[in-house]
Length: 412
Picture 1 (cartoon, rainbow, N blue to C red):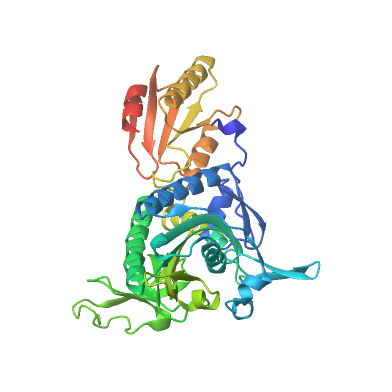
Picture 2 (cartoon, one colour):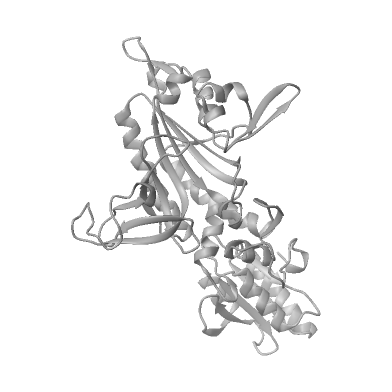
């Protein structure tokens, strides 16, 4: 992609109404645009990052046997009344009337998924079901002030599993937990599994996936020697105390960002919605439900919060919008032509490249934009690099090398 043709350019000024690092940098770098509080558009650069995050999640979901679907965002009141959540979750939901009928915008999809199951599955041998989708969620967030970490409209991946036995649900629950840890590691984050309360989703304990960050709005207590971790709301220990699990490590207290969560609903909702199956003896029994979510756009925001410096964003190579950022620093026609040739060679080799081909823009401005956008590798073609060679510099390192185009392709 040529930068001169890219929709969504960098901005020099920091948005005055944004306080979070993720929103400031993503807006300035041209990844997102703010429509109103808690509502953002994904611009081409941001859309590419989200697409790569989605693909990593999709690959891990497929490994645990899940099938991808897509469910509606507009829901009738009647289906939420079946579980009672039209009333119990109304503070979170966007509810409205149209032509004397009442509707809600999706804040989750348990009821919709169970409605699908009762329509299409009846006997035990069709279980377990493992279905997921990527969709927009709407939540009446009263504190939409943390950029895309706490938005009223956001992109989420939710997986739902339906089983004939609690034991089978428990087994899959922890399979998904392991899968989620792989997802977060692959996108470049270290996440902890944290025990938590269920909130509006379930009264039983659930598990969250938390990334340590001062930008986080959660507080967790975790052991420095084992995997013990709990949300402050249900914490058994305090900072500095001996771990109640391993009896060796000490409890630490940290701010964190929640990037995923998993729930075991059991048969509570299936009983209310009459979601049953016929067992081997011909008897009808309620199905067991599990729900598992990852905030996709929140993941992008989290990456920016934990990976940046005074110059801008530093993207992990797994989710960077482009693999290399190519700059031409010259007004000489032969050098510009050489940069064009290198751009074409990189594309032919299957390398994703953002080419800053702008004219009448200073070298300093191009370097600043490059650092702000945060692509892992910067390539520079200038009067000094020589024919067929480029200057190679990694975003998070100071070392500069002169390489041939073949060496660049091999490295990338």
